Length: 95
Image (cartoon, rainbow, N blue to C red; front, side, top):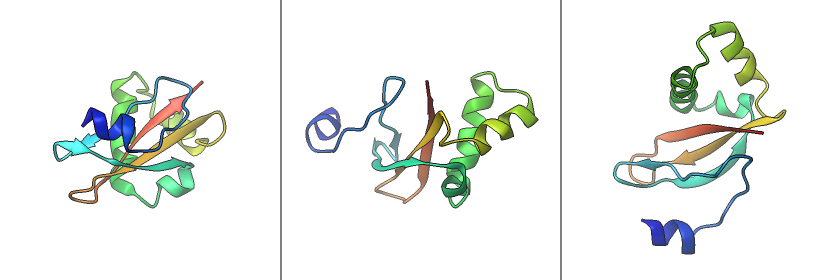
């Protein structure tokens, strides 16, 4: 897996240390940075991001939704797709 990510795939810039998402025991395909409106087209990824942000301490629902609504303005969502089952995955990257 590490060889494929570091040698056979394009890199991407991130504010935080970039990390590659894994699904179905394999690395997911990098799609790109997306805004909230683009992320809304992938509800499974949006719900996963909400859950991850709650785990990271964003418990206030209104503040969480405001953060998500402003993705692309200082913070961004990084979208991946599982190459096995086509599930979309994401994480938030912010300065």
